[in-house]
Image (cartoon, rainbow over all chains, first blue to last red; front, top):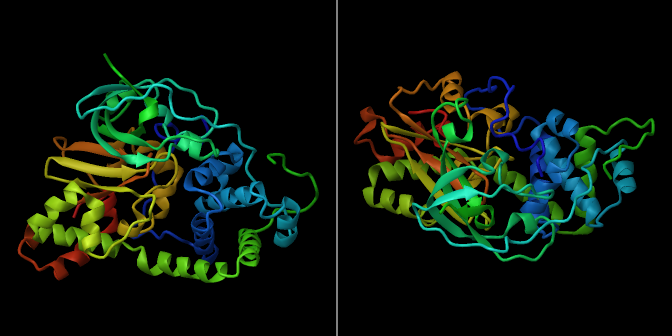
Amino acid sequence: MDGVHDLGGRQGFGTVQYTLNAPAFHAEWEVRANSLYAYAVRAGIFNMDEYRYAIERMDPRHYLAASYYERSLTGLATLCIEKGIVSREDLERRAVGRFPLSAAGVPGRSNAAKRERFNPGARVRVRADHVPGHVRMPGYIRGKSGVVISESPAYPFPDAHAHGVAAEDEPTYDVRFRSEDLWPNSADPALVHVAVFQSYLERIT
Amino acid sequence: MAQQNHTEQPTASMEQRVDAIQAVLEERNIKAAGTIEELSRLALEQWVPQNGARVVARAWVDPAFRARLLADGRAAVAELGLAMPKHHRHLVVLENTPAVHNVICCTLCSCTAFTIIGLPPDWYKDLDYRARIVRQSRTVLKEMGLDLPPGVEIRVWDTTADTRYMVLPVQPPDTIGWPEERLAPIVTRDSMIGVARL
């Protein structure tokens, strides 16, 4: 989905609030929030793609205003309700207050009908797909061309895996893009490497 | 579910929300409490940058290990007793040189090789870094205190799949010949993310 989580290349953001030795956690509840989602994945309540998609379905205003671990906890709570582990009413009774959740999902999709393997050096284009459900193609590479550098082991296909749709695992390709191709006349020169699922790619002939 | 309910009830605090979910999971499975506690211990004590620092120090002193690390990161870190979650099937180690600088990010969320280089710092997960590093890499690095010479090529790695990355920093010349145990403490998390050089 073309959600606000898809931040790469968005303009208007400011200086990174960088400090040396910045901590991963700022409060005790953040440590527990992190452990709770990790527990749920280990316990097989949901997979990582379902988790990421649940966070992406947060209301955009909530997503942008929430801290990282609030986003994590919102995704976790949403999935616990959707999986029937707890009702919203029970959860809000226990929390003694409103518990903001993510929006409902939409159906996912399986692998692309036509996929092919690419060798290092192959010129590829990212398909101009607009996917309503979960997708791991950042918007800034949609329709853009790059060069395949290498192939990864096969992974579950996120567009299906986040939705309980059957699909074959597929490799991802390390595709190298030029920042000047991604944002013509509007980027610092650099090479941008993105791990791109096979279903998102087509060969340039 | 997206609709907010319009009762007068105030939004629960983060602590209350965490407590509520934790109680649900612990009531559901008698073993959950112990696992959750163990995961917190791992997060605070085991998933720390000192792991990656050991890997870097070994790569600096042992050319054969360095070659194995660059060929198959996951297998090489396992030699040092370091594990990665099952879904991180691939660790790609990115070798900095005087002419090439690598930096990693996750524009879509917060993915990192956290068992190796430590859980990501706050700024890595913030909107500003995620939005800007892919497009304004040299500018953002300079703002963060890393002013790269114009001739250095920047390579940005966006962690959009379950392949994980770590940067292998250039060994500072004045540390050549140091033993591994003395080298590991000079390797910082930020140098393995690629927003700092050593």
